[in-house]
Length: 177
Image (tube, rainbow, N blue to C red):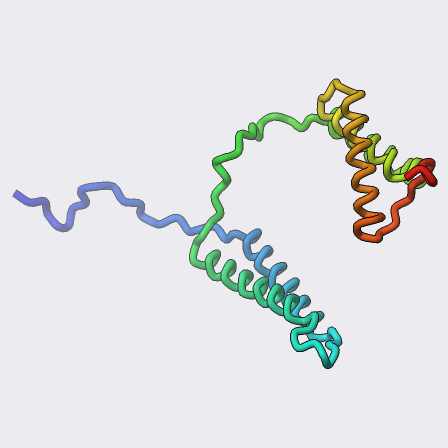
């Protein structure tokens, strides 16, 4: 014997839940559209020399158009109900509070670097920055951190000054570097 077609055999919800509007995705799409449109506008105002067939416009046009197309695709996907999923690959416990002592130490090291870079120069201030950041994040090998920081800071100083031609202050090491 078959069930009567007028009777319901399983429970179904009376009203479907209306999907929530994801304003953040629409906001991101709007920002992408504005940045893309401005990039295209700015590229259009660049002056191109007569001997350069490609000129400096092509890359900003491509990037601006890509941003605009991405914004439209994001808005359409959002309107169709696409929702972002949280990343499952991170091993982060979001219930753990921030480690404020470490944050304060890092801010202090950065402020010390800002305060001393013009006097000490990049090579020494960079070494202090590296060693201080390593200390703030838990390293207890101070001598090694200072040596590694000094090597990295001097190498980056030479990279900027010699390799790129961007002058960085040598500070107290003027004449030595």
